[in-house]
Length: 68
Image (cartoon, rainbow, N blue to C red):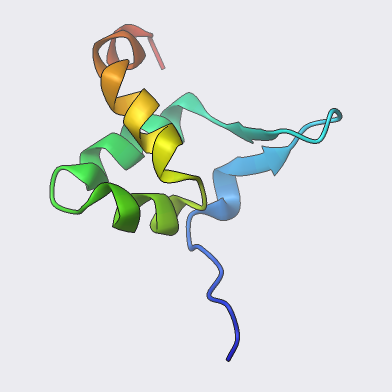
């Protein structure tokens, strides 16, 4: 069985230090997706850990206040 690659990897990349970088646009898009899906499904869709989705949700007001 092959592992499914998340569809939304287009705006995520690996930085020089090996850490994943997720753009502000993608974070806001993930928060919108979260309104109709679970944290686990959202994490799987965006290729991140559920803990990252939880952190983004906790900081949602600040993320949405940043001009895109």
